[in-house]
Image 1: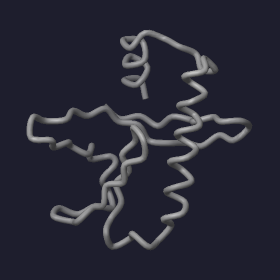
Image 2: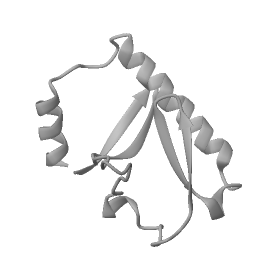
Image 3: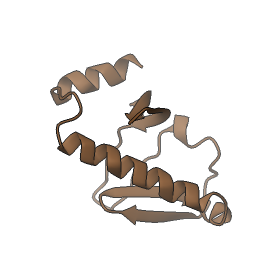
Image 4: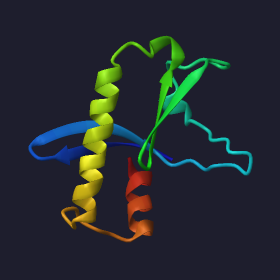
Length: 103
């Protein structure tokens, strides 16, 4: 399931891509086709763990925009903290999934 959504923190609005996938018993995940346009089969990726977040980046692009990736991770963490403080609208998981399917 794939969707584009607006992430709002403060007065800034960013459009992000959201997808739901599963972790296999072997620790594998499938990156939805809509999100892997610039990735090739067999390409090496770096996984950056930041708290509860995982960021995938091409090894070949590791030096490029790395600071932007870290800044995005921090913004995402700030948004998560806002959610934990109750600053976001809460809805049942099934309603959220229904809305994702409409995208």
